Amino acid sequence: MKALSRRTLSLAVCAAVVIATAAVAAFAPLPISIVEPGKTWNVLGADSGNPIITVTGAPVRATSGQLRMVTVAATAPNATVHMSDVLSAWFKRSEAAMPRDSVYPSGGSVKEIEKADEKQMTQSQQDATTAALKHLGLSPSKVKVTLKLADVGGPSAGLLFTLGIIDKIDGDGHGGDLTGGRVIAGTGTIDGSGTVGAVGGVPLKELAARAAGATVFIVPRGECADATAELPAGLTLVPVTTLDNALSALSALRAHQKLPTC
Image (cartoon, rainbow, N blue to C red; front, side, top):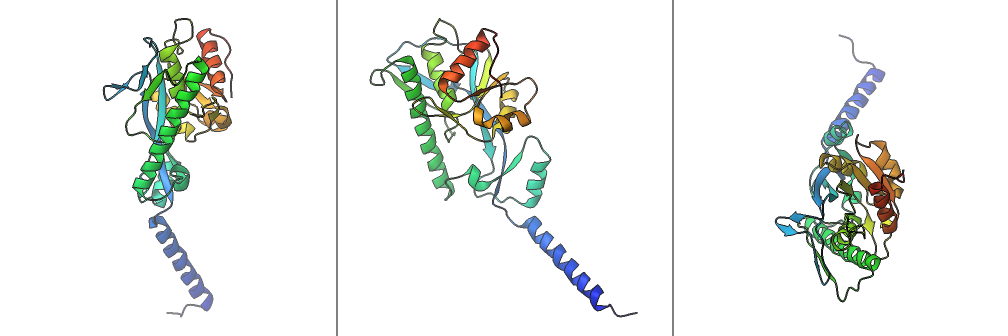
């Protein structure tokens, strides 16, 4: 048998190194989270038997239709994600691989992340209440709003909370519902002045919304590109930048008028 040439031996060694490196990469943990559509809640309804929105100090009206806040579910911040998981998510419409620090931007331990998410949710609820009462011309010293939703963190339900408070107290201002009896879903942060902000994960939230029966999805205008990329059939997008935009769009929807588009 002939001895291997130096070139052949070098190529064999290089190939072995490449294979070994690929094998290590395939099984090495990555700073990635796998994200999928999460739960949805009708903010006009209840969670575990308790009303999500409770108002005292002002009359509350009965509502029909639904305003559904949507979420995404992600692998735990301390979960191990491999390249095989990323490749699997790549080929599934219902999953996405995202940098872990974009899903859990607060970093730290699991408890620290949960605490940060809870803090964001609390601030979001306060801002949602402020925006709603300001729109309605009601004093926060006289009207109290309690928002209660277990096991949900982050600020992305702000806009839907605001719309829910307004619907509970005033509806469309003429005795009707903001929803017009429809199942409407949406996402977006909100500040006390009514400005709507981006949230991320919109394509997966659209899937969650459609699975919950929504036919309309309210989205921050800045996320139109993501929202239109894989829009589920039967779901109409309504892009907004402010609370007033959202209320105007819902009014147009009830009147069967032309809606804003992405």
